[in-house]
Length: 360
Image 1: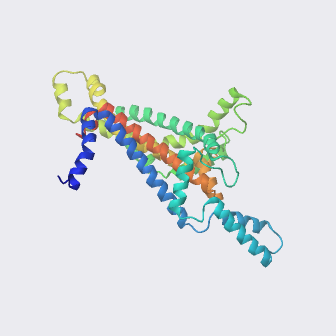
Image 2 (image 1 turned 90 degrees about the horizontal axis):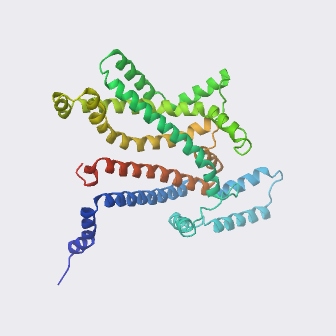
Image 3 (image 1 turned 135 degrees about the vertical axis):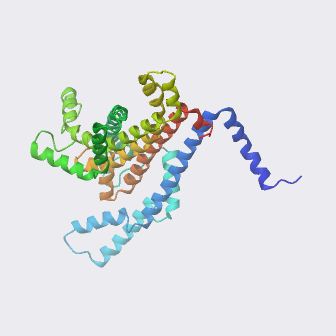
């Protein structure tokens, strides 16, 4: 009995089809996690490939710094010795191998040994450097996400009830201005305001540690973070509020809403028990993109306000050409964003069963 490629493929795929039918939600979650891992793998491969195309490497950078710090001219013997040292350093770091082999070595070190390596500049463990900054970035971005979510739903639902009125037109115009306003210009204006007025610090983080005085640190942190938080909030409010308002108006125009009103259902129940619930689906999908935008925007925000987060750490690593730190930062931030997207997809599948069954 001969088996063709189609028969073999059917035998391989059949268990997954059965699992999807019997456990649709679990299959949906597993598929999203597998997709996330594949994307991370491809992203890491691309990052190593791009680093290979970049001129020079960290060894050249370190040697250049040594040459610039040396006042005397280097003789021929010293130059030959320097070239031998460069070759030896590249061998020690694995930079003399093709980028795909370097990527394989990095994956082995990370997943088998649980080691992200050390910073080539500071010699500190990469995991320690990222961990010390991650809490600050997570705190800033999650507070921004909560404020944007609460404000967007409150304003979007309220303005949808005033559709066509003067208040709604003014709010729509304001939201468009916020959405179209360049984020970096907003950051610069807020930084300038802090510098001129003196009402807020020009930096986004206190100058003393939490352990020195916890109570004073909390109040100082709230004072320092106000302007960076305001910038992130205004940057995400306009687009999110417009999306909530538009979705509410779309739901209010659906035939089922007309039927509910014809049955004498109160307007409050129509708004909050039916139309409002159906605005959750597009927001859950959009919240993942919003979180990704907050993390990518925090790179510039943390630089301008000298906020010690992973975005500023990435900037410092790129300036210093610290490859280990750059790669770990890119993969770590990408993983956080992808995890947020996977959680959004899972939440959407829990809210709307049609998603997990593949009917929408």
